[in-house]
Length: 67
Image 1: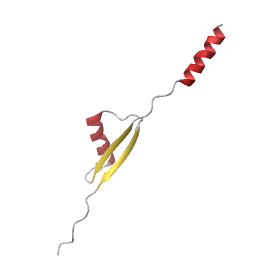
Image 2 (image 1 turned 135 degrees about the vertical axis):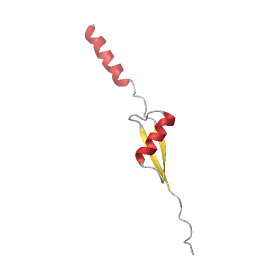
Image 3 (image 1 turned 90 degrees about the horizontal axis):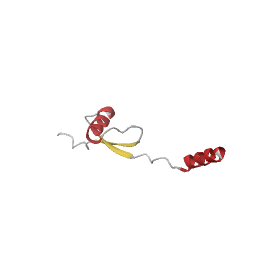
Image 4 (image 1 turned 180 degrees about the vertical axis):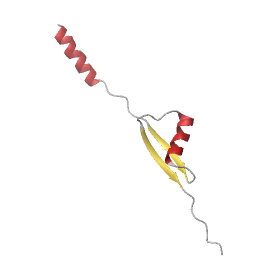
């Protein structure tokens, strides 16, 4: 009977899905390094841990040449 309980526990463990990793969208501006952008995001939203991240780099479009 103990062997059957052990097998059942193992099957239940395998069938329990792992929680899905969360996606984090981080904005990195021109004057920031990637590390600074991540630190700023984590300061507002808490640690990312081993979740997934999307890094969006924001740059300014150059204006017309002075002339």
